[in-house]
Image (cartoon, rainbow over all chains, first blue to last red; front, side, top):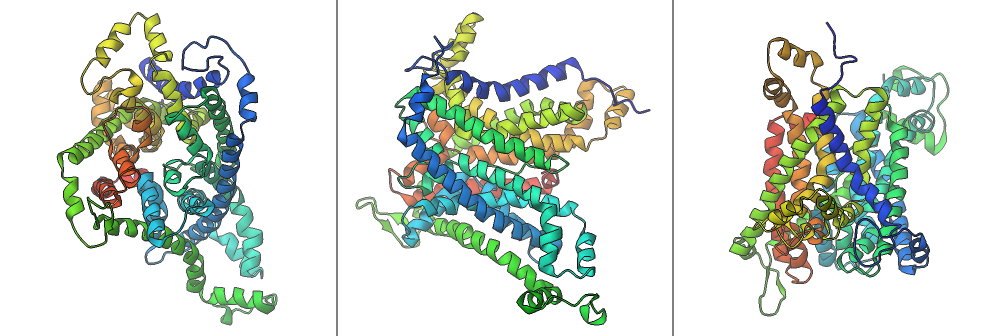
Length: 271
Length: 316
């Protein structure tokens, strides 16, 4: 007898699961309320009044714009590099078995499997040994390294579901390798790459630990926020930036989910 | 089939492109090599190279008087790790990581179990997004949200006051070690935020493991007279264990390395990550910072080795 269909869960399980989900979401929702509070100095709850004036204040802060611009540029370049490296790696790993294949997949995963601080300090000590000064590119170097895995995971999952016979058929019909890639392989993996790219962008946009070690004096948005958390200047501005950051990262994630929802995993990220 | 024995129906495209395409067809290893070269070079040089640079520095030492780094092979820095203050940091971090892992597993299980066994269709998608969105939301924003919640004048104090439970909070805060001035400057606060931030990393693998448990196994257990508790202990838990171990790799490793959460929500007593950060930054003692990072690497090495033996990698 099959009875697991339509069967409902015990009440205690329902409550526990619902509490768990609330625990995950309420703190983030709280940020939205705080972005509108009239209280300037403390974290007092409930907010004594609501206002939208902090949005205007934030809009006129040049340091916020500079951090945002740096974050977007770093994330864009890192994502581009990760897309190239991740696609090449996943194509190689998924199409053939070769000596050292396991090692290569481990190599790709390692930058996020080990704590971020290790990646960060390793890069920093390498820069100092090689006497490379901190710049835009040192940040990109770190970000691209751990973004590869996101693209790789998405692309590998898609390659596994793409049947090899389509490629053979294309070759049999006379297409050369480049034509096959352009007309058969690429359209098949395009949405997975797009999803991987969006997640890589979100990951880079949010990264703080590695960045603190590779950024020198420059501030990305997370570094700006960290600075505000340690030495607050204008709390309401931090509230507004926090809310905007939530909204900005939410969209790529929802979009990536939409693109890969048919069975692919978009998991595979860590700090 | 090799090209030589089966002539192409269409003539191959000529020129450079055709020649290259033919070459790759005949020598797939060459294509493979070309595809692997860029990512392996990047990761090998940038990442593994840096790790070795770091490892090498942990065998240097710092001259205590001049503050200069002495580039001569020595184990002195590792000896410094064994000082009481440093051992204390390591012990504190490992304890915290273990507690966070345990708590994450307990909180994650009902969510994962409900999502794996009862959620269907749209609910399933909702559960999935419900875990993915917090996972991918900004790490600092999440910590900031908890700063708002745990602050002395924040929402939690307000809530407890409404429930007339402030005495409970005060009693807890007056405890040694876990207590403090307010929740936002105590180990309790650090613990809560760690659990919150890493929880999705536990839910996903546990859910994946539970999804592979056939529902009729649970029914068979209750048909044979087992209580829900017995079914959980003897059927569900053993089958979910690889998933829990897989999740614990993340929660444990991430807690070992994090320095931002204890810095923003925590006491002045350091964790490994903070020690690394301050040694390399303000103290300028890169060798000691490097030796400190070797600790989580070694612990995670053993952990991963153990996890692999338990089959946790299949649940990832």
